[in-house]
Amino acid sequence: QVQLVESGGGLVQAGGSLRLSCAASGRTYAMGWFRQAPGKARDFVAAFTWGGGNTYYADSVKGRFTISIDSAKNTVYLQMNSLKPEDTAVYYCAAGSKYGPIRRDAYYDYWGQGTQVTVSS
Image (cartoon, rainbow, N blue to C red; front, side, top):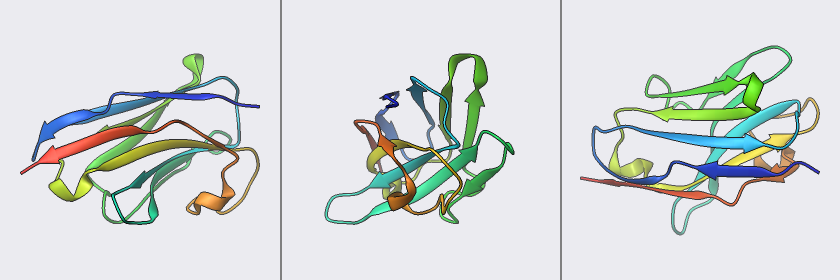
C-alpha cells in the first residue's frame, strides 16, 4: 500500500504560477497528475516513470507545466506556469505499480486526496 500526500494548491491570478507536491510512502513504476473540474471527467495532466525517467504531458499543458521528481524524498512535483482560468480544477496525484497506459486514470493503483487549484481571470 502506497500513501500519497499532496500539497500546494491555492488561488492564483491568470498568468501566475503554482507548484504542487506529492509525497509518496513508497516507490512505484509511475506517478501521474490528473485534474477534475466541476461537472467534468477526470483528465490526465502529466506523468513520470521512475525506471526510464520519461515524462508525459497532456497537449493542453505542454510547455506550461513541468513534472519533476526528488528521488531522495520520493516526491513528485508539478510546476504550473502561465496558468489559465481553464486550469481550475481539483488536482490529484496518482501512482501506478507496473507498466501500463499511464495516461488513463484506470491504470493507477493509488490516489492522493486532491488539492484545489483556482485560477482567476
